[in-house]
Image (tube, rainbow, N blue to C red; front, top):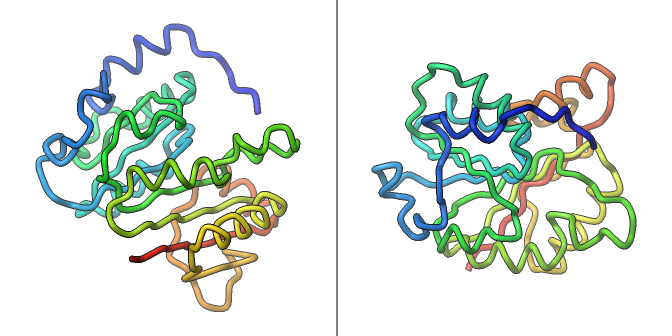
Length: 212
């Protein structure tokens, strides 16, 4: 998916109090950053930040970190935040393949919200639920592993269920139509999700866990 390039995005984002400079220096020190021992929740590919911002607003007893590679997208998140005071939220500019350079075993939950599906076979390793990523997450999760995934892409969803199950994750909840599930699932919608909901598209959801 192509996004509008924002001129001076790096400078705009860098001025935000939410943006973390040189995050690799904070490996194993994120509790010090937040100044508490609350669970740390990580969103990979946060885009314009609507999900992670609303989660931080709704759950002040949890810490949230949004990871995004595209600085132009992050500009939107910074602008949305404005003068809000959310001490439980930080933003990082990072390639997800380098997560273990930034985090030790500090992460409670990883959110994968409408990630790029990378439909071509040659791009399989770029999917956030490919085995290589699952192995990477092992390095940053605390003792237990917890991944929540939402997508409108049926093929990515089927692929993710397969890779997660092969990696010994169990599924606490699975929905083939999140917004019309018989048993409601607590949910914060992303901007994409709001559009898809209006269009009547089903949203696929899985809450996957691995507990030692």
